[in-house]
Image (cartoon, rainbow, N blue to C red; front, side, top):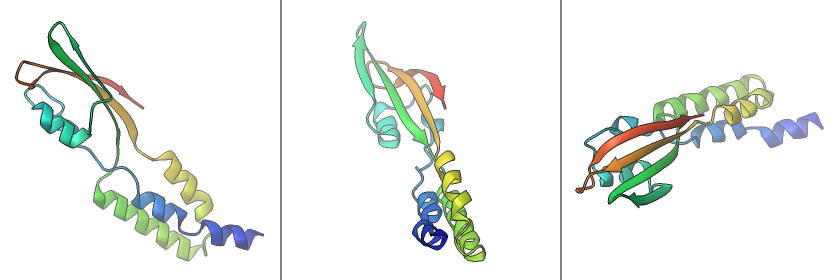
Length: 125
């Protein structure tokens, strides 16, 4: 039974590490950034509305990891799988579930030219 579990789990943490969300450039979340640039980096806003003739948007996303960090994690999980004959998955898979990026949200308001004139950090979990 244990052998079947090990074989079925083998490689899960490697795959999960490689598929973690990408790292976003939160340095763009500042006054003076064009709306089009924010949308290209963070995707469509979760909320977009006009109040007092001004556009307000909330961007929600998961801040992930760099390509290098994801590759290093996947390699480490793979090596640990080989050394432990797959038993590492009992530790590696829950670890990848736990370290799956941080949910973040920013509120942005724009001037009449769709340039950010105010950016507020809302949350990080």
